[in-house]
Length: 283
Ligand code: FAD
Image (cartoon, rainbow, N blue to C red; front, side, top):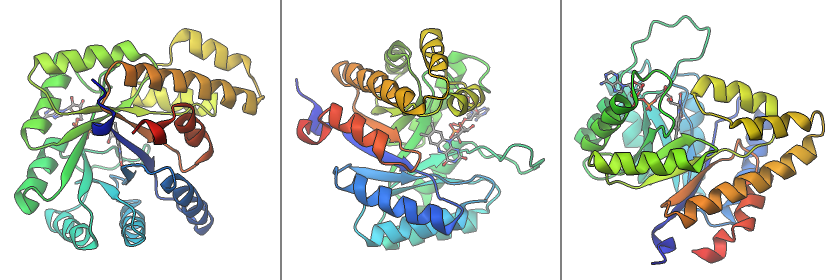
């Protein structure tokens, strides 16, 4: 069966800290909008650092007609503030959001109590009923703080039971990790769509550093190939486009219900991957 019509394709942005960054994001957003994604999402600093930036950009792009899904977490914010934000998003026309526990900025020494994502999903459902399509995060290679695979999936299930509509995964480069995770989740009674999160490869050092922090594995064969490119960043990027295109193709062929691209606010690389996969025509 061709299930492409039910698949969802989306791009993630983060809120820039400078006017120049926002101007660049406006350009990337306009270019990616032409591809016709189902939605864009915009990350949220759980420490409150990008709270206003996320809100302002989400509302701006919603007004321009984009389907925007703000990321949201309790972080250090009160329930009243989250309620106000939900109402603002609703009034501006948002119909989906991504509910997270979030991470605090490293080195901040913050003592803010994290509230788990299932509590936020519950809160959003209590406050706004069925208005929002709620995405949550999940981890085919398991969240780095999790005590065990089984327990991490059990906590994922709590988010689903609290009312999550679908999930977006942490990125990974090993499709088996994803397919086995989806099967395991199904065995545990998790039947919501689990959409792979796709991280393009454009810079080996930053990818290696980030992957270490978030618990995503770069397979050894891939790490060694990437190391060999040294300072030839364009050759590395071109190779990365091929690798990630193949990964996406395997995922879609294997039945993944869509793809969520971590665009890093740049349109070029994700557009190449999108076009290689003929995603505009396939849908
Ligand atoms: P949770 O689902 O709450 O889980 C966090 C950890 O606690 C896991 O180890 C889980 O096993 C455990 N756990 C869950 N519930 C319980 C419980 N009841 N008792 C004990 N342990 C429990 N970060 C940001 O700061 N801003 C963003 O915008 C953002 N966007 C993201 C988007 C996606 C698609 C993904 C995959 C991640 C994103 N992150 C973002 C990172 C994310 O916030 C971190 O991975 C964070 O550490 C976990 O968030 P979560 O919502 O998955 O947490």
